[in-house]
Image 1 (cartoon, one colour):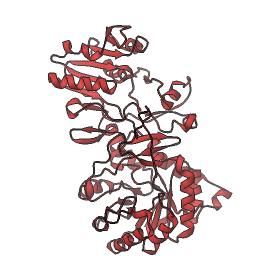
Image 2 (tube, helix red, strand yellow):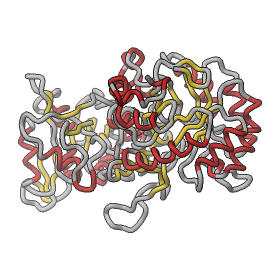
Image 3 (cartoon, chains in turn red, cyan):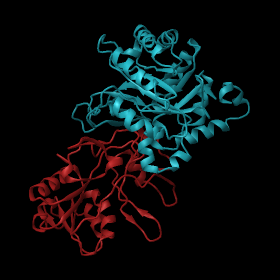
Image 4 (tube, chains in turn yellow, cyan):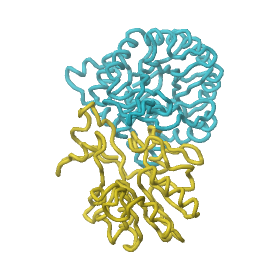
Length: 219
Length: 297
């Protein structure tokens, strides 16, 4: 969870009020953390305005992340490439990475990865023209998939992996108020009923889910 | 301080359903016990049967606050007594268990079973739901409230706290009815009814349950007025809450007549908010301090 130490609240419409949930994108050798964020609402806009030296409020690490698996294949979309970056840093450099973005401008995040990730863009301005999930089929054999991205992409990953009987771990997103299990607001439906994503996720095994299209994600 | 005969190290409680001590211990480890943010822990509301809660989305950020439609997910009475109560008993502060029944028989079974347990110091009655037999919101009607408290009081040697809903015509009249029927304290406010539409413009309600409850600083002024009005009307202790974010806010609720205060939505922003608010309250000094009730000084 992240918030600016100053000017958090009291902005337009008295928002943001609650901190926002993020995955860290990279743990640096000097002990600093990197985050990827896109200014899409009052919270992310305020965070994007932070100047060097300004304070932030941080609570974490929280939740359960990716667990170790054999022969990983990483599939990311948009701002959801962040947790895959941190994961890839821990894996051999030649671990295959497939990344999908709207356009070349959004695809800059790909350059943060070591090695050379394969890129797809919706508008074809760089890499494969089309969905990143279309690139998965040829690489799936014998792999374990790690994925994070927008809900429709995650759902496509889940469905493809279920069809091919390939294990997958999906990092999901849900609106959160607290991040530590207090508010019960971030639940997602699983085959075993609702679970709190902040506490028992955000990474879930794909076979725990009927769908990765979680209601309310991205708000 | 003393609340209904229960010794507390200070006047800061949590609002029911705004802090899950078991989950927080998983997230933060045993340091939670060393630096527990509240002077008394109020459980999430338990019902007789287990509940999944409402379909998501369950949250919507409002100007200076939050709408939630959680829907009281809980393990039910048996699951709570067997699974949660032993863990809550390890907390370093007295335990208050919040219960909700959809009929007076259900409430009687809940209160009877919880009152038997030594781990429990206090019982809070969440009356913000309809009585399925009468259709009336239990806590919105003085007669309903009185009949429920009269039925429940003989079943418990533990103090009974009636949680008042702000969605009543006259919360002070409900508070007086609760007091006269034997309630040992009242707590208020619960969330105010609210709704939000899909921010993407579909025109549909955003929350899975359609409507929800508004909390946070957005409701503080309303809460303070209701606490003051109730405190003037009753002799029993009043536990005040609603958007408290600082020691100054807490002091205001105490000056308005509350004997203790509760922190709710502020804990979502910072799990240590209770600790900070208690420290800020202790630092209220000089002339301002003279206006605090003796128990909180």
